Amino acid sequence: MGKEEPVGDRIQLFFFRTGVQGPGHDLQSITDAGALLLAQNCPNLTVLPQLQYTQVTDIGVIVLANMCVNTIRIDLSWTRVTDASAIVLANNCPKAKFVNLSFTRVTDAGAIEIVKKCLELKELSIHNSLVNDACKNQMRQMRVGLRIDG
Image (spheres, rainbow, N blue to C red):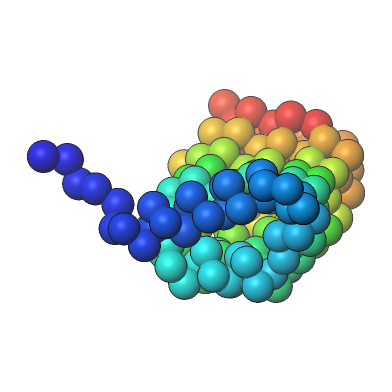
């Protein structure tokens, strides 16, 4: 038999994914407190739930990155995260393969750290972030074959 996720992980993912679907709920209702609950109850997550349009800030992302170190897919697009989140992700989630920082406040410093430290990274999306063209070119030179969108 294949290894099954612990019940707590399934319950929290169900709550996180469906809790925003019901009447009176929207993505804006997901906060750093929700990210903390998710991290505490689902430390083995490999794919973070999409956090676009949520109220999750650097605080929530840093908690997730500190507790969910096996994460390989991270989508933080359309959030208010900054380099603080990117640097903690780079340091704590070295297995990350797909990172989306589009429409965030991440700058050159955060993007460079992810490229340097996430050695399995295949794709970095940085559309409408604060990463400049010179940095994008530098990252392409650092990691030949890395797909950089943005």
